[in-house]
Image (cartoon, rainbow, N blue to C red; front, side):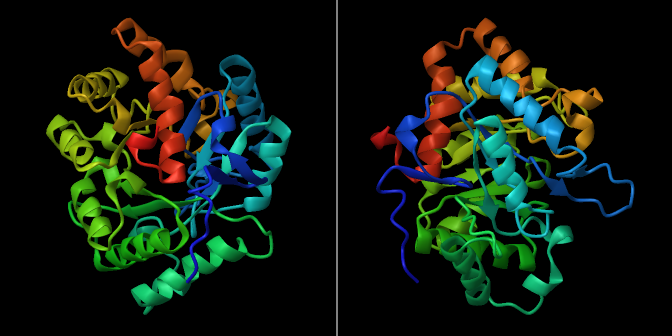
Length: 322
């Protein structure tokens, strides 16, 4: 396996081609879905269909670019989640917002059996590296991140452990970073242990959905270990109130870990779109960041969390290189 030298050059791999990290002057949404299909019941709620919902998605992103300078979206729809690289490319071109596509496997209920059944860690790693090097299918679109690689519960299941280990090995082989799905915030420490046991540096790991876990001690342990801590379901009040998210985030900032935070909204169904009465991709900018400012967080820290941190995460740079 050959290492792809994009990180050392400060380049981000987007769906429309390489992009200099230094060219990003506006904020980044660190965990979103622009096209998605997680429907297992037939009600089509957990869906963002490229044809039906794509125009509304593009409209939101274009408005966020104009109003808040949105520069880039890390789109973490991976294998088995309804990924559509052509649609991502079209959205990026329509909106002027750069998009990074992903590869990997979500948590076990959504594992494609054709990929995972009977496959060794080595075979899974090969699948990921080929996709990173050659592109997704025949599209030529090359993933720029591994994620959202998932588990549920306090420890990964056996198939989840295989997919996480494969993601770590693929990250080592290609220079990409790994973003995880920790179901309802649980299991992040176990994910970090498993990924780092494969030799992946903690600063190339983002542990997902930690704003759903009301446990500041866990957040501090992740940050102290050097991993990114994702507060990435901002606005999903049915899971956790933004008031609790704010308290947890302020505690992490007070502990001195602003350089370990990533922020996003994780839009994962069409009902979350503005056009359908949801809070949309912009809730972070319209509501949560103003609340942070009111709580005394200054603009430099907000820029750190919304631009410099996600850029550094994608390039695999250490905090010292910021």
